[in-house]
Figure 1 (cartoon, one colour):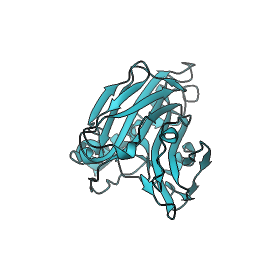
Figure 2 (cartoon, rainbow, N blue to C red; figure 1 turned 30 degrees about the horizontal axis):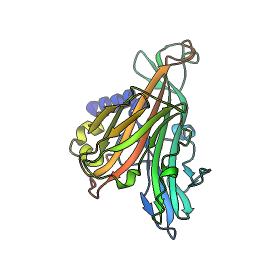
Figure 3 (tube, one colour; figure 1 turned 60 degrees about the horizontal axis):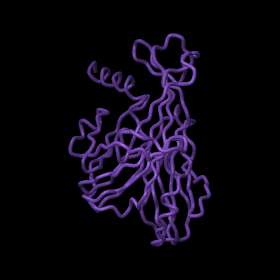
Figure 4 (cartoon, helix red, strand yellow; figure 1 turned 120 degrees about the horizontal axis):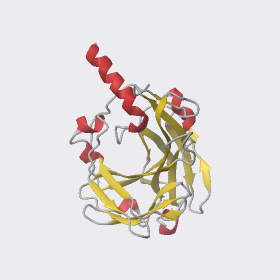
Length: 277
């Protein structure tokens, strides 16, 4: 019992920043089929899970960007992370997730709360977190690079410069990183695949997900991702800046992900169930 309690306490202390946002959605869809997608918020990629009640308010609905650039909210249906977008016409779409700016502060005992320093004087550190996820969907072979590579306006955005759904192992996949709409130079971009994470499940479940790629962006904010194995890949980066008012919070941190399916191999590891606080 003591051991279980200790593990749960460690989880509480670490979990404020341990979770990540991404989109689980099909890479291809027929116009006769209904789009279903998950707003994944977890530390157990690629498995989505129910979002804790005290965090539901942080999330905007999954958003669908159509080939003409228009945005619409998808409909939440089923579990609180599951969405539907109905039937879609031929073309290239982007499905995106947004975790709204949220203060997280920690006290000396390591307890996290959704409050800033002004609201919680006993806190020793504070971060304002915001997270963004993207996935590309091609309906009826309607591949359109102009729609795929058009920024959708996320604060921190991974913009694919090729179709991420046709990347082969060992071939380069170019992306551009934008922060507040401008190229972000010198940013470290990492990536991993479900097939890689599954080889070391203990690390993945301990918030130390093994990464299979790391690279830095150039002056134009561009970097080539190099996926060496088949799997469902998650490209990610974190960008931290000082918060405008240090009396309110220390850092403003943005997180972004882009999903890239490579080949047909997928990990079939069972989800690791754990409790939220």
